[in-house]
Length: 78
Image (cartoon, rainbow, N blue to C red):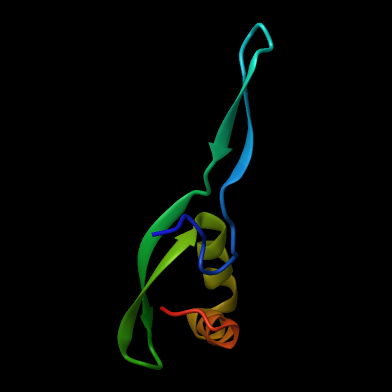
């Protein structure tokens, strides 16, 4: 399963580990993803999404129905 938020589209980015002596080695910064079940009142069922914490805040703000409508418009499966 890929490390991509289904709501925001956040994905891993690359950067450097920097030691005290300023040596740099490549690393990945991973998004803070959680698999979370959301209750959809209109469908009377749970929907399981892999979302970042920012995605959870968006769902709290807009509502799960609007977010699911956006996901289906993008062709995302849930």
